Image (tube, rainbow, N blue to C red; front, side, top):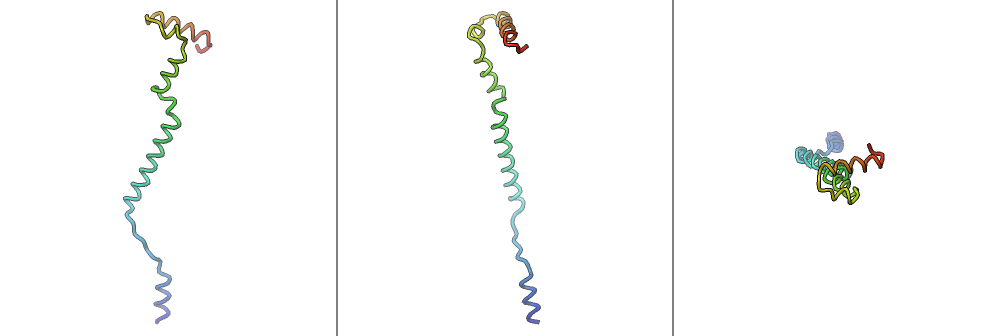
Length: 86
């Protein structure tokens, strides 16, 4: 009788309980933070707020100084044709 109780006690695994809801939320927050990091790191340079000033600053000074929209459009089209963009 003594041996069976002893073997039963030894073979019974220890069960640890944890709050799975808190654990799930923790991992979900980690995944969300990683996704945000990827979006900012990988796609941040292609955002309009980043790309628009970069393109504007790459234009020639005489094109950026145009006072009239029609003149700007005409010079922009000429500039883009010269660079073979259009």
